[in-house]
Amino acid sequence: MRLKSQQTLMQNSETSAQYECPKCKDEGGYIVRRKAGEIILNFKGEEVELKHDTDQWVECECSKIKKINRLMKSSEITEEFQKMGFGNFITENRPQVVQNMKVVCMKYYESFNAIRSTRKNSVLLIGQPGSGKTHLLMAISNNLIQKRVVPVMYFPYKDGMNEISENNFERKSEIMHRMKDIDVLFIDDLFKPIGGKVDVKQWQAEIIFEVVNYRYLNNKPLLVSSELSLSEMIYVDEATASRIFEMAEDYTVTVPKDMHNNYRLRNVVGG
Image (cartoon, rainbow, N blue to C red; front, side, top):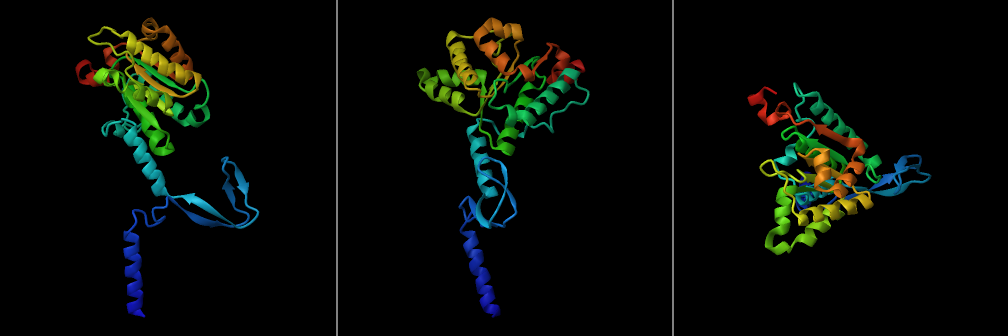
């Protein structure tokens, strides 16, 4: 009997080794027997009490992890940026406006499920470079992907526009389609000044307007950062700016232009 038991254990071990996930045998889920009287969630997400014993398909944790990995890979978020979260955003001895900015972003994340399909479903952080705008919007993005399995696309304005214009704009339609269709679009450093001067080409403004307008009409969330002030963004493109402002009305923070608000210069200006 001992020999037979050892053989059975070896067979089970070999069988398990054939699967990436022994729990669901790479099926992505498994059947669980639920008893009458148990409270479960139906397909609408509503709590219901079972009247009879029933079998229920349960998604395996490995399936969720695979989805998260796929979403993270397709998000265009670099490994370094994937490390950015609310927990490692430093607020100690930071200006009050920066501390408030973190609170607003955390509130947005907590409210996301309730507001994601409404008109006011977006975030806009503008003003002083180095104040942490990208970090906080990246924290929202990482949390949405990793904890809520929500697809996010990261579009750094300058590099993104360069990618669109490469090879005679051959990938323009593909990239714009992704920007329109993705559940959440993060546009970083919108209309970024070069050498202190704002120089937005007509084709760049047209692309951003088309994407923003599509998302505005379809209530699809935007996360936007920019060094420009509200008036400067309106001057560049009033139609685009006004749509973003309306979508982000409840979650907009302006960080005044002051080097003391630039965390990267903290050892230079004593901020």
